[in-house]
Every structure is written in C-alpha cells, then in structure tokens.
Length: 350
Image (tube, rainbow, N blue to C red; front, top):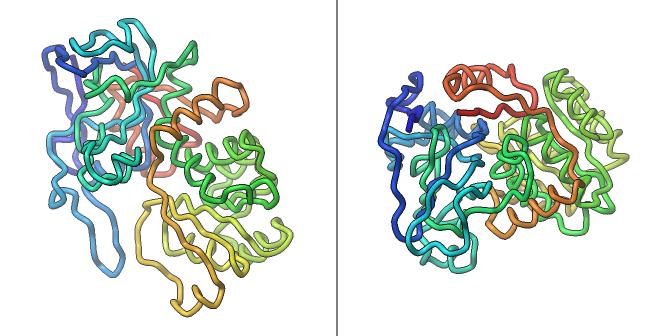
C-alpha cells in the first residue's frame, strides 16, 4: 500500500510504500475510497497550535509520532478482517470513526472516547486515511454506508459530527432561536445544513471571505455578515433580530471569539470549536455579568456519529460543495487550505 506521510513538521508529505496490512484479533483493514482534508490536519502538519502571548503547543513535545499518515475523515471498503470480527464482512462500505480512546478511562467507559486523555485517534496519534489502506483496531468503529457515496460521507467523521455535537449543546434552544455561526469553511457549511436537518430555526453566518459567505447562503443561511466590517456586530444583531442566545465559533481566533461573546445576550451560550489559535479576549468580569456560558466542543462521540449518519441516510441534510483530488495532491491541498483558497471540502481519493 502507498501512504503519504508527515516526515517532518511543515515539510511536504512524502510517499511511502508498505506491505498490505494483515489484520489480527478485532482489527479490520479498510481500502480507502475517500479521505477528507480537515483544517485540523493543517495544525498537525505544521506541528502545533498558537496559544497566544507568544506561546505554542508543540505536538512533537506532546508525543505525536513521526512519520505519521494523517487523515481522520475516512470512508472505504472492508478488504480483510481479524479472526474475532463477526459483525462486518469483506466488501462492506463503511465510514471510519477515528476518535478512539484508551477504552478503560472514565470518558471511554461513558462512551465518550473522543474525550479520552490517552487517545489513539486515527490520523492524529495513529496512522490514518491518507493512504490506500487503513487499519481500524475494532469493528465497532465502522459504520455501514448502506449505499451512501463514500466521497460525500467521509467529511461527516469530523466536520459533520463536530458541528452536530456542538449544536446539540444548545438543546431545544435551536428550534426557537437563530444560531450565530462564525466561520463558513467546511465546518460552517456543515453546521448550516445539519442545523436545518435538526429542525433548527436558522443560522446567521459570519466570514471574512465573500465566496464562503455566498456558499453559506446557498447552503441555507438566513444571512451572511462580513466579519471584517467595522459594524460587523451591529449587522449580526440586526440579522438575529436582537441579542444572541446561541453562538458557535468555528474559527477560534481572538477576533472571532470576541465577536461571538459580544453578540451574546445575558444568559447566552458560546460554543468554541475552532482551533485557529490565540488567547481568550474576554474581560473576566463580563462573563459573570452576562451570566454567559462558554463551552468547548471537541469532535463528537460514536453514538452521535451514528445519529448523524441516520440523518444523512434520511436525506434531510443538504450536500455542501465537495471537490475530489487524487491522494498524490495531499500537500498541494493542505497549502490551498492554509491560503484560504478552498470553498467547502476537498476529499482525496487514492
């Protein structure tokens, strides 16, 4: 099999050829048909996260191994199974759930493996989908596609379930109040479409890029505001019809976090998802004065991924723009994503 690997942080991915894997025990080998390129891959490729005030989280110091095959939005066909596997068959098309934990800690026992402190996430801590084949440690992490197109479904393993999990944190509020969605990249467009499928009232989207704002409107957003405008906050309040009760920041910069917080009404909630980087911009007294809730969201759990796929199968979620490229163009795709040249999602196909 051929994989495209991070050999050194920040340098072009390098092709590497390996023998086709042979699964043992609970393992399953999946032939990759689609591997989504996520903004999180940029941080892994670059080797860290900006923490603000000149500080940086260095992935090398945090134990991310190199060489590493990235790719955590993977769908494909089962080509071989270990001796213990009874619930999956060779030839099945599946979505790979990548947010795998240690299996024994409190989070894992509560079926929140995505929150495990000793993660084994595919494409992050273990080799992922930028490859011809991927080894999945247990068949329970494979969700049948039931005829769905793997190229269209692969992004639901991260951008889809992440925004779905974030929206669930507002509960029934989304049915009565508009949601402020900051960022109209792959996650933002997913958020708009999934909100609609969940019966949400609607979304007001903020983005700096005119093409992405247009894509958000095409996806069903009720309004799209230029986040760089001097009166961006006033435009947001006007589009919402008043204070915001539910905001999602899919960018995660000081500027976007400030806008989301400033838009909140008293008792409103801001869910932070994006990992762009920087330090929190809020004056601390304003948090209790607003009675604001600021909550983080990191991907989603396996149960939420199953729920989301049920919504996809029902046809309730409109499709966002997805473009395919050959796996050999992985480095060029990461560069395009970094430069802001991508609208929607790019999926690599071996």
